[in-house]
Length: 313
Image 1 (cartoon, helix red, strand yellow):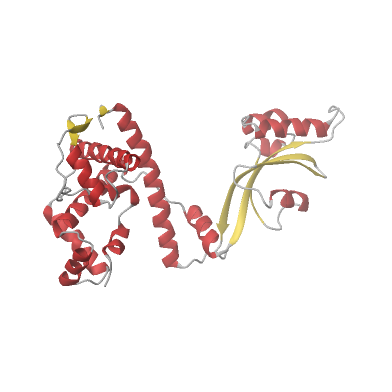
Image 2 (cartoon, one colour):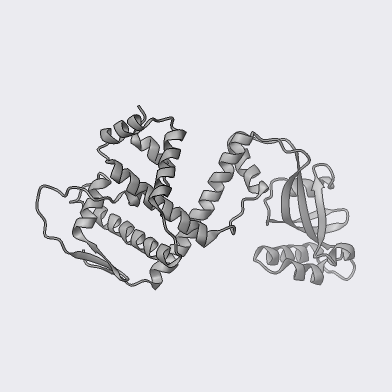
């Protein structure tokens, strides 16, 4: 029988705080009080205790309780922002989400109910979890929309980390500053070292090209030499950039033409790129989720700074 914890893997860790549901409080009677104010909402001691218990944590662990209170404060803010955005979730939406869970894990109604019972989770609690999750997803959609993109290059890079190289040739795009050995330059090697150091420190590369490069053809294009496959560059330059990454400054490198300060502006796969489609889509989804999480973290921090939050625990 599938465990409810397996079902819950479809929830992101950020939204596990949505497990807060009405439950029986401890047999020990407590006096309820307000322990936090979040803009126009309040959080009570009983509300916090219910959340702590629902997450199977010790309500007497002060450090843990404070962390969960912070999570609850964030959840209150998310709900408030959802209302501002006009984001709603109906019971019919929850029905569809639970049907999807049953379909995904091949569960009948009876099997789902049995799994919930084993974990001491009521159907009402399970529905509450989904309602909170759907609300958060819709907030994300309105906040982010289509602004987050996952590029093919990002997928290939992550794919190769996990599954090894994919087919296709690697092309590297470079720009350079060429300092030649000339009668009017007292020490071209020293000048090349000085210019490369300026580039590494963040000096605008285009400006350095215009000021120092003697390759007049490429200087008009910011030093751009275009894309090269393996074997298309002279050996010394190819070896110099072989282990570089996009954005790296390489050199100075000595060739028959003079001293080159090279900027690696891009790397890409050319020709036919073959990847396992199943793993490719998994990687695309994970990269997207990571970007969404990072964007939401930044957004939530900004919202919290503008919110009125008072903790009384």
